[in-house]
Image 1: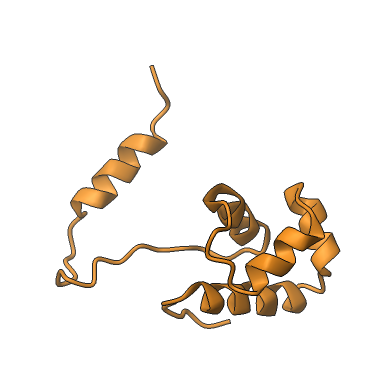
Image 2: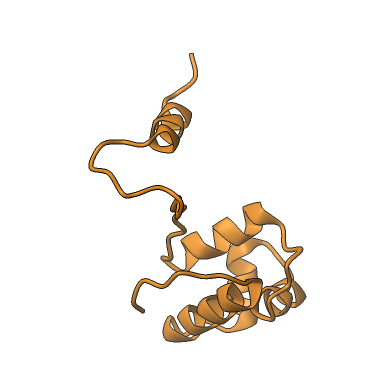
Length: 95
């Protein structure tokens, strides 16, 4: 699957469905990996905009997909952005 920019929950659901099928997983199989119910996967793939974000991120991880945030209002720079710096701090072990 090539990199795409998603604009709607329906597009996210379609991308997840496509990747799940590419990996040979059933909706039930993905649900089992996530500790969720098949109905949750059905709703996610249908574009449910109220899906729990933590579970959505786990689904992306299980399917080897990566979500990225891009500030479309700022030109791309070579240095780290303020958001990059925040994420780097969050990844550091707490003291």
